[in-house]
Image (cartoon, rainbow, N blue to C red; front, side, top):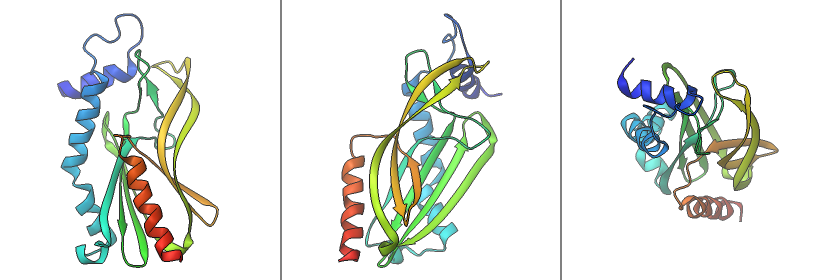
Length: 193
């Protein structure tokens, strides 16, 4: 296992007063995840997977959001000793806007296991979207190597509701998420009027 993976593993699995020795710091982990997302080239990879041409989705620039998520049955959020909510699962989502549709490409990957990843694609008509919101979701999780500590986890999510069905995408709020969502809302409203 490479040095960086050992530090990440230690951050999520360590317990006790000396647990953080040799573990990656939360700020360094955020930077590491951002660099992995940059390497994946999510915007272009999503366009290719969805079969889109750049001129088809030039209504407004594609929106890239990322955050910490989970893949059912594999992992959940973890809280380090400093109380920062992180997860080895990273969710990077590109949202594209054409003249009549919204396209979504979401790529989830595990920073502790390169064999774990999941791709989700969705496509909606603007008229089908009933709401867009930024939510703070909270949940109770068991964390730690022995899953013996219960913590409250908060996650910022962009949520689209389409005829009662809910699609949430984890996002790391860099302070601009509200503005990005406002642009989405305006585009949807424009198509509903």
